Image (cartoon, rainbow, N blue to C red; front, top):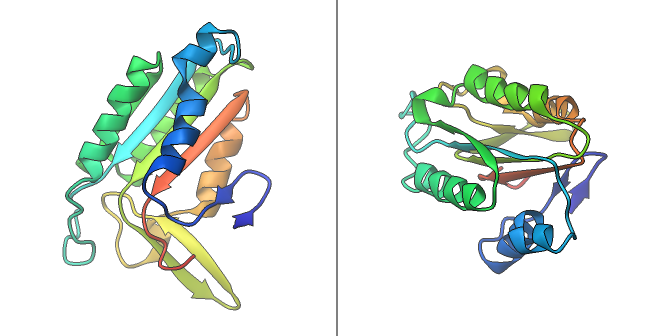
Amino acid sequence: MKTDRHFRIFPHHRGSALLLVLYAFCSAAQVAAGGLNYSHSYAVVVGITNYLHANVYSPLPFCQKDAMDLGRFLESQAFIVTQVYNKDATMTGIKTAIQNVARLLERNDRVLVFFSGHGVSEKLGDERFGYIVPYEGTENTATLLSMGDLRELSSKLGNAKHQLFILDCCFAGL
């Protein structure tokens, strides 16, 4: 597991472990019992099934559906959800959605950011760098959202009491 001040990167696992973490983060029962007292709960949910450059990034049949399902679940847990799918999930669209939530955040709020789509990594020098691929992303990693970009967006969400980023994408071994 690789960690830094903001992020923990776990090996990709589908199933119960992620659901337990998500349930603990979102549980309305815990909120009602006084275990988690948040003023507001926000989420940005991004799902990209079809990419502009389909010759580079093949369709991912379940990404938008997974994101929509998660969005519905979060709404049932009293989250205010911003949904960004396919053609709207450009680099600007994703950044705008997150920054719009950042403008609303107060000290006792929580925020969840979920991305389901392609991810890539590249080795530069002795280090590997990870990226998520927005709708219009190309093979040029300058057109992608880097983990550094996500750290910067995370710092803009700094007013929140809690932040959770979930990236459902492959990073080719990163």
